[in-house]
Length: 369
Ligand code: GZL
Image (tube, rainbow, N blue to C red; front, side, top):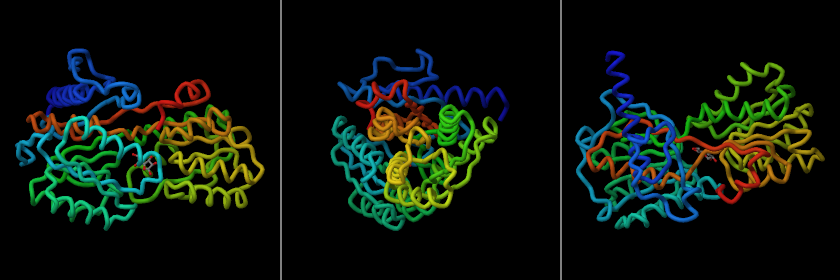
């Protein structure tokens, strides 16, 4: 593809993404006025600020995106449709609670005839069977929050056999876009890691010993948030030494347990980067129990943007949070509507995320999830 045509495709894809987001009533940074349908309905009431997700950029498969005919699916009126949503992890994490609620709220708002929902409880075999069960129950469109980057093939094949499109949100899968799935809607996790590193450098002055509480293995979120953080630290703060990297499996209990062990094994730790808020909050509990002063003598930075973590910044036990916005409902259904209208859908629609620190946490707590 020539440089000009690549640029043309990217422009067209970004325009498609902008229109997508505007239709969902979602602000879209990087979109010119002409690309956004500013008459689009927008989330009503107080949820508008909370619901806002912003697209930054969309990369696209060659040819400017995936169309209904290219995918080989049939037109569908969502109001007369059965839609299935497959959640990956158990809903004891506010990220998961907010994500599922956002899908339910948007389905209700659009008047989707029937929304089936499942929760794989962090077990890949269950996510596969959940998806297969929803197909058996007649799901005509699937919205999937994948647990892992690999392993969903049996479910994707079952969907393809019935020509049921799959829209993935939140985590990216290693599969073929516009064949195994229509598109990926989610954050730039490498950038989240970089932004967390910048916040950590600011909080520590670029010096000290940092422990990383890794997310669960087998997904691109953990890989990318780690890469983004390590690369940024190496480039900008060689005085900040990474002395430990251990998984807390994205859970508060495990994050607390790992931090308790690290306090004993690495007494020189002066900073904690947790790859999600739940682990970060668990670490704060462990630090307090050990007589440490989280937010002060041990700096804490994490990713998600949950209300508890933003409140911890206000309380002074936390230093910064990079958002990973889980409210995919409006964007997922706007994407589906555009897809069924025959519009080209970009391979990736990357949303932009807020950041919280002592300068804005107090005013932001109410809008956090
Ligand atoms: C991010 C999502 C991550 C959250 C965690 O899109 O996959 O998984 O950051 C969750 O809270 O466990």
